[in-house]
Length: 391
Image (cartoon, rainbow, N blue to C red; front, side, top):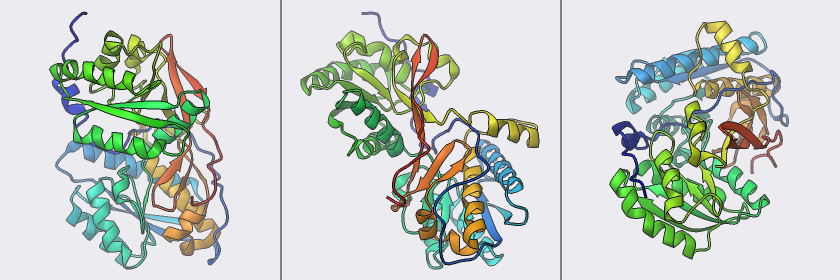
């Protein structure tokens, strides 16, 4: 057996920071759809947008700028005068985020859009709970969802649910999870277990490895024995292409877990970066991605308005404004309460259809894709119907 290639420092550390999930940018239908919300008349609303500008990390500044531009784009496409947008800096600090939210509320905000980071969103949610003001956070950390905090971020539970339903339809019903021994991947593993529940597949076990070349090699014999002993027919991999995924899929066949016998399923996008599609070990792996039908339209309009490409998280701000504008056109400020947003049904956004669930998380329409001959191939198109309202 040839020795595995070593992980670079970037690969080893890449999975350690749990940021909101990056999403492929897509188009949107200008019309959102869902059930009308009773209790208010159509009317203008004010949005307090909280972004991590002025943070010490320059990358957060770039994200803040793109989120702001995407939100402004959505406002420009809404009914004139329906949405007033005011932007506030959090500096990626929970205390500053609370101050920003207080200022936004004092200046007439009916709803808070943001913040980005989970701890900031949790702090703002607690502050805004006393007035029952909805906080639409860009985070995908489901631990902070609930009460008045609703999530816009693409959650790992949602990805796992889509993969599980598709796997069951293809006769793959016994899933073994393989994750690195890191805080980030353990969170993804636990989210996957929750997401797979009720999909028709069973989680028959899991195995961990230290996030290093030596750690992976040392752990694989035991992981392989456990997966085979549990009767698994599919392997769910939590690493991404910037961490252990390329090396992991390259080594699995050498330890008795070939793709010909075990269906590989990836919690991360297997086509990012695009060069990953040429990796032999990722051929045939299943993963999720946003609706492919509207792909490119959001990018085109954003670039036309701003002269540069959006950050991968920019669609979240666009989607938030789309939902807010739709509710304003139906019920005005009354349509922006947490329960009204949950009861509203589905909205159309930059990456397809989405809705808020009763626990504060969301359901986003996702396609199931694979890689064949170094090219992404869609196995199941994203659905425009997301089930019963609020469930």
